[in-house]
Image (tube, rainbow, N blue to C red; front, side):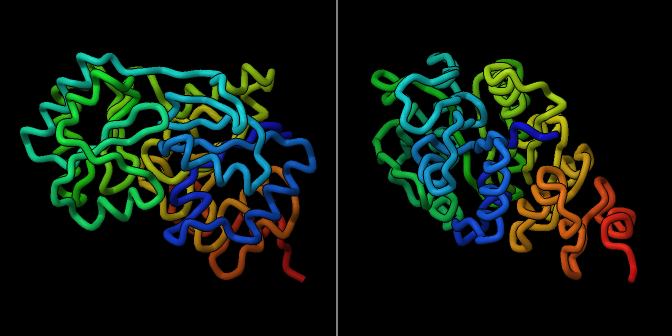
Length: 297
């Protein structure tokens, strides 16, 4: 029995159109009607996640900033907040600025960036976030508490940025890839999986009764910790490798399919049109699931 469901936002709950599909909304509402606690687990700011939570009638604390903040909509008192040390953030910001990286520095409730010429992907990824343009990112640290930073680049350059951050700062901060074009730096020990563990403990829900769905490397700890861990079909290979089950893509209402199968226990969940269910780690249709729940007439 699933009692706590954690959903990644981008690439899982919503696609490029930034909307939640009708079937997904119905599945979440049906789960909530069965008293399943639903939360969002995202690298996004709380202010970006909150409108989606309101739209889906989610009242549980939300996991934001890759797990650095756990806070309920309507509450001014976070369940959890973890900040990065100012000297470390300053060092990383200065390091990236010297290399011309396209950086965004986050403080709770705010995002800061330099008014330089950024690639199109920069604006696509940050379309829902209100950016405060500043002349110096390190200077912002004097007035704002650091929670995380991101570097945005084309995928090949992002590979190099990730490797460089891991080599020089990996023993002092968590480095994770949340998108093919996004590398993130968070306080050491901060992950979505750890935040889910703490939220489950707060709600007195055992690990075996939790479920999580995600699509990128930053969801690995989340999916790995949950009692039932689900990856999206077009997710990262590393995530699919460790998932218990792989759902159809966001375009094919994968979140709804997973909820219908594991939470609502409806036979129709495995009958997912021609796309079918996907066996974890294989990338191939899970015919065993289809045959068990959709027997031939």
